[in-house]
Length: 266
Ligand code: MG
Image (cartoon, rainbow, N blue to C red):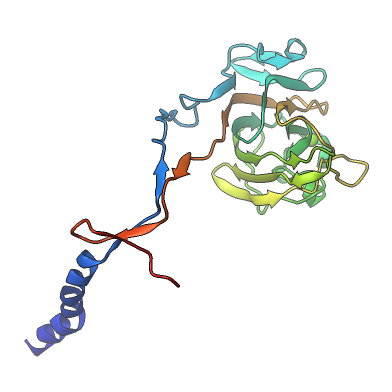
């Protein structure tokens, strides 16, 4: 009995006393009139949500320049001759793309299952068979080529499907060509975070340091032909748009009776 009372006194009593204070507290309102968020019907198991631009759904390569030189086999696209670029262009976007390294695995290092996903035709996140295949770390799968390795190696073995979910913030440029704000990338590989708001230093060439050069606000997605028959499927893109709202008044407080008052001066 004494123990039960002790429990009541220590745990329950403070809660009972605190509750009226919580319910009576003023509510903070930010004074912003938000636009109602659009309804998007999500896809099933990685398939495209209702507002996505589908770049490849297993049927044909009509959404790609140079697509006639790649193959579609059993609903997947296979790297052919030359890079392909999407006919549609994107700025800030969410990109979902699935890829699978060739079987049997051939070659080593950069020569094994090499391809790449270039955002805005310019900035490469590496596609490589990095399953038990070492290379320089800022050139393995999930690297921003020559800028950073992925945080971890989340590769599946050759022949299995890898999934990249990429969140891209495009760089902005001033009128005079100088950089206004850099590009940022967040990427998830097979459900594992590999790049977290990484700030790009510029483009991703092999033979010189990265650099920014002014380009259009939007650019195509490019998939690389590096001589290996990497396969791709289920590719879709969503434009990223911020929630919209208008500051219609200063932030304020409202009590339980509906009376409004300004925030206390700090
Ligand atoms: Mg590559």
